[in-house]
Amino acid sequence: MANNKGSSALEITLSFLAGATAGFLLGILFAPASGEETRKKIQEQATKTGEKAKETYDKIAQEAEKGIKIVKEKTSEGLEAVKEFVEKKKEELTKKSPEEAKQGEVKK
Image 1: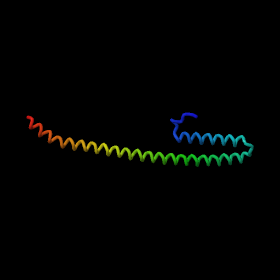
Image 2 (image 1 turned 30 degrees about the horizontal axis):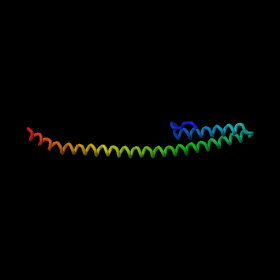
Image 3 (image 1 turned 180 degrees about the vertical axis):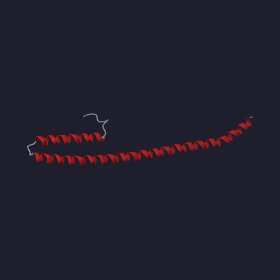
Image 4 (image 1 turned 180 degrees about the horizontal axis):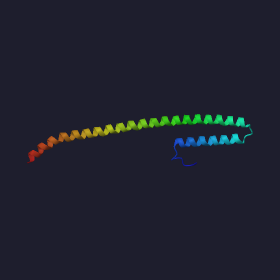
């Protein structure tokens, strides 16, 4: 099989839909049927393919929204952790500063 590591779900889905549509159209065009029947079948298949494409797009959009939400949550958690760390270090420095000042005076 081909290496699909770089392919997105959207690319794979669109490729599948394009192949299915092309196969259907070629089958219809070479099948013995009247022009009216052929046009009707093509129109029906185009409608079905459009509906499938919309469903696939909606699913991908929902997954993308979930991913964005997770990234935002993780980013917020990371920012909170950094803020807490900075505040802790500020407190440590302010507590050490008066003590260090007293020690510096004693040594003089």
